[in-house]
Amino acid sequence: MTRTTAPRVRILVLLFIAVTGALLAGAGPASAHAALTGSDPAQGVVADKAPTQVSLTFSEKVALNDDSLRVLDPKGKPVQTGSPANVSGTTYAVRLKSGLADGTYTVTYQVVSADSHPVAGAYTFSVGAPSRTVVSGTGPTAGGGVVGGLYAFGRYVSYAGFVVLAGGAAFVLACWRRGAGVRPLQRLVVGGWVALTAATLWLLLLRGAYTGSGKFADVFDLDLLGQVLQTKTGAALVSRLLLLAAAALFVAVLFGAYTRREEGEEKRDLTFGLAVGGVVVAAGLATSWAMAEHASTGLQPGIAMPVDVVHLLAVAAWLGGLTALLTALYRAPAETPVEAAAVQRFSRVAFGSVLALVVTGVYQSWRQLGSWSAFTGTRYGQLLLVKIGLVAVLIGIAAVSRRWTGRLTDPAVRTGKAQKTQVRTEQVAASKATGDGKRTDTGSRDTQRAAQLARQRAAVDAAREKRLRDGDANRFGLRRSVLAEAGVAIVLLAVTTALTQTEPGRTEQEAKAATSAPADSGTRAASGALTLDMPFDTGGTDGKGVVSIDLDPARVGGNEMHVYVQRPNGRAFDVPEVKVSFTLEAKKIGPLPVNPDHITTGHWSASGVQIPMAGDWKIAVTVRTSDIDQVTVSKNAQIG
Image 1 (cartoon, rainbow, N blue to C red):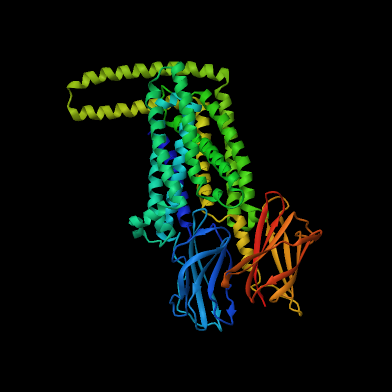
Image 2 (cartoon, one colour):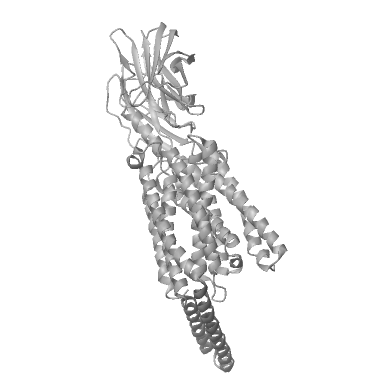
């Protein structure tokens, strides 16, 4: 490494360390991608009598174990019995002991969301009257602490390794095939494979402790590792390791047999085979992320997963190819410089990648945010705005690089450069020949002096090669602009990794709406009639509104029910279908379905709705706004 190049490389290393430090510093406990949207008893409520169970409702399905839901009495002793169970949809409950005393109880939960992230938290409710409690540090430490930081770092390294591996190999095959024989590029791609493989094994070992106790000692628990292998995330990590074995064979052929083949039909066939195999392996690796994270849950997973795969491949082709180009410009030997045509080909690949990123990014943003207000009102939206800004900066710098590329391919510039290169090459050859003569003359001198002279000659030769590479002003300008692109790309990759560990804006807003809603179970008229208002969002176009349930007299026996659906502005909303069900979870009754008749625009009605017994009933309403967009919302209400 020459003295001039070293400071720039040190800057990149320091930038990488700074970004990694920022990621680790920002790794808070339980980066929840499923949010608690409801509970019974609710947060802070004072119940007249002790409940028979505690139920929690999340924004998506979660995975539980025997200790996922715990209820602690004022003295900190557990009062739940049996294992928690899924009672309906995304609602989970655990039974309580009978005869609970008055006082304040603490509910703690620790689950794993459908997109593989641990969710932990706690809240309190009281029976009879609030009391002092000895419970402290209520929430488990899953997803936080040292293990959480190490897991976040492993995720960053795995993304970086994939980008370098896939993007570097794509650069060689699609842009600069001569680069397959360049040692620095070989080390770069192999380094990406090593980083991704090591990070995948690291994540597999940490996974059990990350979603469980949070203790580093549990990393080496083989029983815990066996449980991880049975989960969706464990299967994704094992699949990634198997695909990395295929990637190792691909890299071995690319930098082995491929470089030794002479140009001709046989090499063209091998190029085509490597291209097809490389795309298949890279897409498989990208799928290992899509099948276990954001894309695999929530709205339209059947569309979101392929879109996520295309997004990851586009990121790799752009940023990984950029890293390979930077390596070629700075570290390729003077006798095999990267050609202007190769730079121009990469420019076209990068342009196509940016287009793919824009299209897939718009869809992902809509899916994860759901509203314009989520851009500024949620952490996910704020990070997304930072990412969009960085992409804009990167595109601006890329435009500068394209101008330098155009000058490199200008015929007049290329002719002049060729003449200068020929002269300098002759000078280098003559100088080396002179050096060889000197080495012969000094053969009889002592060994220490000969070694010192050899080091000096190596330094002179390296400096001469660098002057030869830097002699072309256009190539030097391109190197500087590509270096700036790489610096921004490192920060962009860090922000993207942080996004994958951040609760989506849509989910965060749903959780805020649920926790800010009144704790009561509806509005009652003097006659006893019950009215429930429930906002909904099906996720599709024109999919937001409010559904209201009027139940009269809201007692055991026959009831008159009216359902009203309104748009956010209060106007009647004539949706294609509305269905209602009643469930008494404490007695395991229901769901009792009710299909109301359509009366007029935004109004449905049903007579003789039978409520068999008094209790805390869950009233669920399914609203369909199009052929594919529907959602179910629910509230609990005391009937009878």
